[in-house]
Image (cartoon, rainbow, N blue to C red):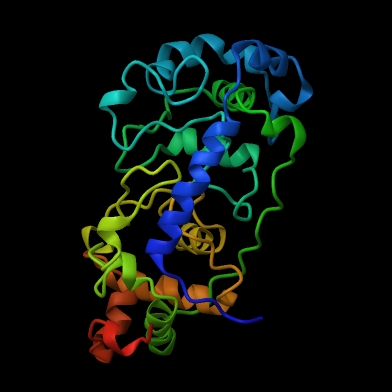
Length: 289
């Protein structure tokens, strides 16, 4: 398969155009949502839990409606003061998934996001909810969009076992970082200051910042090496961050994980192993167009 070259600015422009068409398709009425509320597709299944949407109505109105709105369209009373903007559930486009780009997430994906929250946003970790309340909230979220009536979640991507961290893998990871042009958004040193960083927009044409590895904050979709691997392979739908599933092999994705850990400010096994390499920041001028 031919490998693609990514340009974050083109991705951002495409996302903005796609977002406008999505917005046009997403105009749903309260009556339609009420009808979907009573369909099997609106329930959720997480392990041995079954979530019922109507059971979450009061919890949603107490804790979620102020940002996400009565219709789940992200237009709650506080939305105008929130940056980044609350998720529009009517579009059923989610950043954090274990499924391929463009597909619906699993119920577990949404369940985990509710508990974890989204770092660098106003979405806090709702780990005070019981497991059943979270399962019910997943079902309630699903009743907002027509996509759940006609589509199934995507198939979970496979994450192979994490290999041994070696100097060779870290150096190879830096080569991947240069080749697939992560630096255009994230910068040569992972400081979110690449040439495309200031131009990025989300799927609705709103400014969005790339992740800053040098700050060392939590990733949007988890904290572990497996979480970071998953982000490469699923992409973050609704943002300019694409899926690299068709462009890098699994072992290359692991190498990239190991290299990115060396850009973070806290001690890690990867940084210790990388010390003797004396790695210098990549040279964007040497990476081609």
